[in-house]
Image 1 (cartoon, helix red, strand yellow):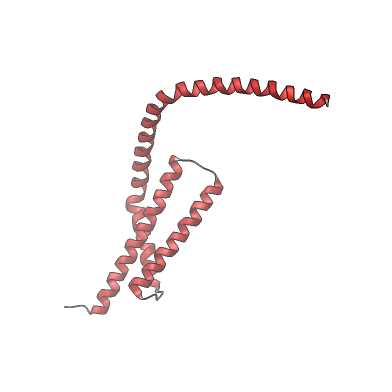
Image 2 (spheres, rainbow, N blue to C red):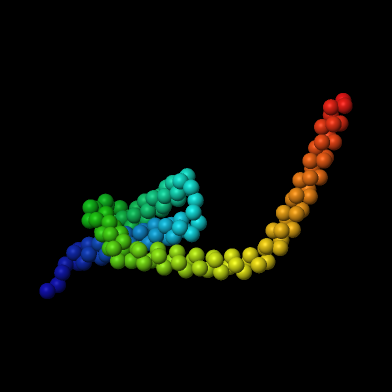
Length: 150
């Protein structure tokens, strides 16, 4: 039994919507991984989320425009939500845990390597900062005394 061409196109469109939903959630997982590796405040989290939702809007718009001639269809959004839901259930926790573990290990490794080279430079810079701070205080005292004599 053959299915009509229209039903086949609709099934393809649903499949694309499901894949787009999974891809959007994968993108959000990348954002979550970044947040766990580089912690930052609520302002930046809000900015990141705003940019993420702008990207999501653009991606869904392009999907609707290309696959369905711009017609908004309920099952398109249902497919996107279904793709997000399946990705969340099947892959999300593993993707986030494994990537955070790998990235933290890599960054810790490079931090140790660069730390060996940067520790002496940090000590020298602290000594230089102390010296210049003392010298600037002396100069500032001399300037204040000179201004008071005027």
